[in-house]
Image (cartoon, rainbow, N blue to C red):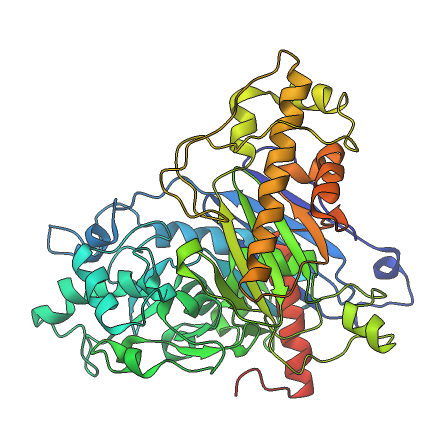
Length: 519
């Protein structure tokens, strides 16, 4: 699959022109539809335009400065001490909105005019409280890594099932409860329906998509991936009764599947950015799910391991697995045809099919994250040393060193032990042997992770695709394949913006077919 490898720097745009686009047989009067995906990550934003074959035609990115935000959800929810809900400094939300429209403007106009659908992903559990009439924030966003107050976490724990995803301190619901306890019960009227003071809750992705379709009630909708940490049940496709019984329930957004149609672009966006009037805006997803969609992995037993600073795994499973002991929880895989053209999925090969099939049953992305990973390698080796030393390793030979590579004490998955100590001794005199021991030990932890998911009831792993910096080390890939006993290969693409563009394409196709994306 064609990919754009980005050079360093804060901003880059590259447009592609295929032979078909420049051919006289493909006149501008009959352009094929294009699809636009945005990714709003922790440090920057990106936009990707693809055609119907998922070929990347433009790729734009921009880093935004670190937002000036509170140290906790409590400080964000409290607002400014000056009497204004928003602090006098520019909030993170303003930076996101500016990035959204700057990215849109940097896409070549000839491509913008052909965009048929737009989707967007954002950081999971980044929570906003906005006016229902203006869609403007009434407090600064409560960021993905901010925790709710102990009082809010305790209040959620009283009503939610034990070990529910929403009971985590950084969950969306705990952040919303923090705001509610500080503002909603104070008699300000902001927590009540009706009147100019009505406010609602949205996620980062919901709010940004609302900027494209005009906000207001049309924008008060989310997707079931973002809604998971709010307490939404993606299996029953409903908010549970315990959540609906809360006094803040009226603030909750309507939920669709990722790729569900919210509406069309606003007249202002059409006029300013030359998007077609009938360009649809679809619900988005989280940044991690968008990155998974970009890998185009759909068969139960297929998995993506992210080898970045830490090790994170996501496995396609027919069974939903949630186990708070290990930080394991399941996202519902958005409905759609994510496999590349000409690639048979496992189900198709099993049943002798030759083409993509509509999923009739839910598939789940079961995930967990270990504290081991590339950060350990960074403590001992430079990139050049990793390349040179890896070349000296025979991946077919088992290393006998028994390590548990961590940068600091504590592990969560596949071993739940907050006091687990790093184990990186004895250290051989030969650095290539030391590196071999670390790489093989991380591979062993990865194998344990997938084994634990299977023990908990998930589909057994069959193939592993790799994202992150570790995907570029072929020796490590070979070691991992030997240790896990399954094929291991780098993913062709794990850019979340590309995944969001695929989601926009899927939403457009289903919209044209009249397929419902929610029960």
